[in-house]
Length: 231
Image (spheres, rainbow, N blue to C red):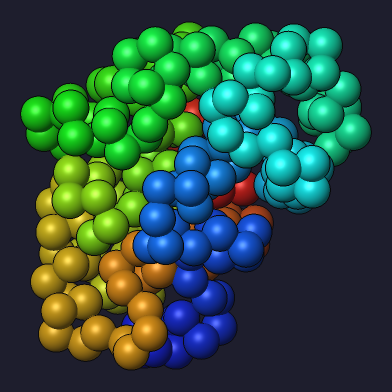
């Protein structure tokens, strides 16, 4: 690929959009994506995580109130139905803790959490503090799709996206993730693609990075935590 347009045409944009979620449309949609990001954050296949999210979607169990109303046993049953059996107990506990913390500290509002955050680093710290198991990987999955939606959502560039951008010649090697993000953003300003934004470009690069890794053509430095399908 020689242009961002070719990359996006081949690999598409945001992962949230694949689940029918429009993170730009408002708080309810962002709450849906937060639930999905938690599911994708475990070490489970992206296919099973997406299937499990769709079980929650079909039952309209998407808000903190609805998730808490299920209780631990109800959540385990939903997770098992989606094929999440390996992590059902742990994830049910995590979901309850996350939603309890959201209700207690931010009146159940992710928007309130964003507004309360002093800066991007504080936003990431507050999200991680919601419950044990919400680590940097899950937070990165969630926030990178909110670039230019929440102005404090500025997570480092995914290592998969960076590796893909290096492979395609969009970025030089040796940059740290923040420098890589800044350089990629500058390039995007020069050659934007109508109908897409920087978060879409990163998602396309993540998909390419996954493809390159499967083919063994590019070694991703280190290993990002969480679900390898979205890292």
